[in-house]
Length: 347
Figure 1 (cartoon, rainbow, N blue to C red):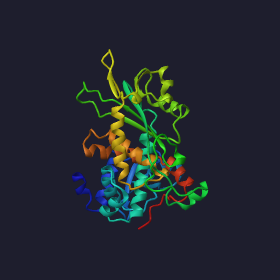
Figure 2 (figure 1 turned 45 degrees about the vertical axis):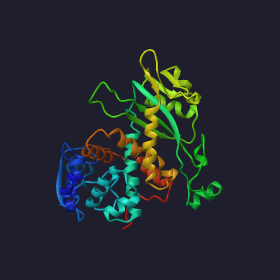
Figure 3 (figure 1 turned 90 degrees about the vertical axis):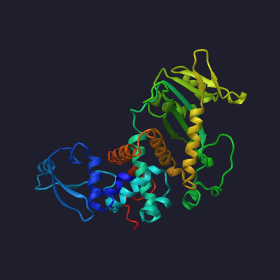
Figure 4 (figure 1 turned 30 degrees about the vertical axis):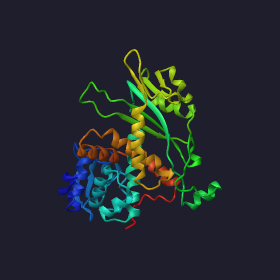
């Protein structure tokens, strides 16, 4: 975070830096995208007011005002640019709300909503990006993460059941209704022959249950046809034999890796290692609800895929994804769960 120190002195410098990240090629109107934008006086919190000439002509007005945060997920936030920049700088370090609140000098409840907003932007822009595909050599595996509705009396009453116990000890396969939602993991192996190749690219999806009908559209959309596809002997992956070079290892017989005659290493150890990293990341939150599990998983997915870059490059890439988020998914989620307001005014 050393490069953020000059911008953490006041709100104006923080706002100017965030504006530069949002529009690296020059400021444009956040509504129409036009370049005829005139800077006006600043807001009290340091944000720059802008007047779009095209929008003013289209609306038949003298002015069409907007700010640096117009049409972004921060538009309704009451936090200052300086506070947001500090929270954004701490976000890639995989900290929980308690640690971020202590470092940014804000309330823990505010920090929690900031994290949800940033994770939601990454989920909507990066995780749901239909152009991302894995190819060449791809491993697939599933795991089960304990997550439920502990402490939410309304959710417990709606499902007419007892609250989920802490430290839920269940072995074997489970479903989301049991408090252990399954996660499907797809990882593209790193090309070791290319020294400049990025880290192993991963795609993680939280599911209600693991069936062939649930994972078939995900694999078809995220794995390029004709790729080598490595799994265990679980029968839900048998459908991939038609479109992929499907090879399996038999964990039940004690086989975890082998080398075929063509020199291909058949194993799922890359995905198993990612599961270990994901569980260590989720343990920092000291319990997690199913409502937010997919957001935390999306953050880990993004940080893992950009882990080969310098911290500053990862930070700027994350902010560009967040600023380009239209916020439609987050508004739907906020409408579905009325306890998650968009306005961050809990100071």
